[in-house]
Image (cartoon, rainbow, N blue to C red; front, side, top):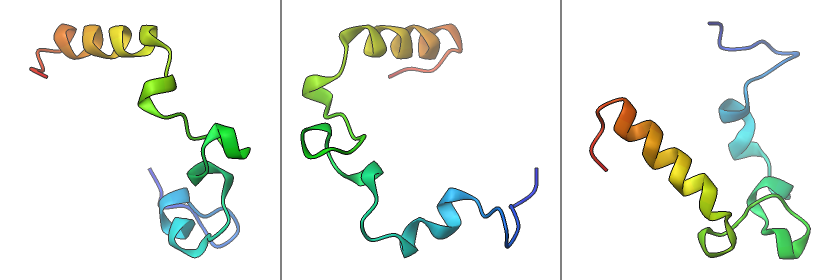
Length: 58
């Protein structure tokens, strides 16, 4: 896997340069961040099932 390029940088390399990014704003503010309280409970069930299937203790 490459670390991206000047034209196509990876997100973690440029995330510190972004100041007004919708990713870090909650959905109530028009962004994409979903608080745990508002998250679909099915997501946690699937996540914990995947951890258990791979032998990870949560």
